[in-house]
Length: 260
Image (cartoon, rainbow, N blue to C red; front, side, top):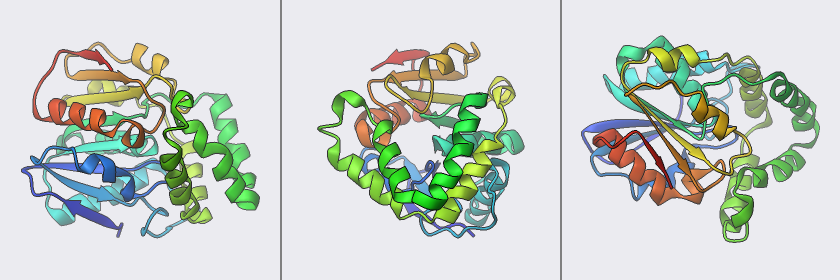
């Protein structure tokens, strides 16, 4: 069973899935500004945080099934599901398998589009580096996920992100990476999901091609998107802005597109 923590006692359940080489603590800054109307269920994904590694490959579909076990155990019924980066891939896999159980899906600096061949090859080339030089892999990659223009003021958050990544077992990192290599396009999920889809993207995101993502979003009334002045880690770079959007969109309604 995956490790999880619950915060708040609101009537709306919001399940939060972190990204690659992260853990449930990444939501701490946002937790203070998310509405009291939410009960937050923060999960450590397999091989991350306090959740064990289960196999050599953790596919997004398999992880979605593990998340469902938590939802069933807690008796959540229908709930809001939010995923950062890899967590967004898992959220989409969940929405494909169990759409009737979700009130909304939030892609938080994530994408429904499949990796192109260049990105897949980049992931494959990372495997021997992680196996043989994991600290160097973390130090080289983490800072690139933050807004280049604000790295000086984000120095503490970059250091925290590196600490969290280095605390992740290499076996867990490799299992997740292999799962992401196998990840498929989820355009069909976005086109067919009947409840709200919220997309929060970063102008300076080096991991997700935000402009391409937003251009390819289906033009449907249940989909809303925001482009924020930050990199890949809005939970650390712009936590209050991200929380305000989530509070408003998942609890109320706004016009379709906004830019911050």
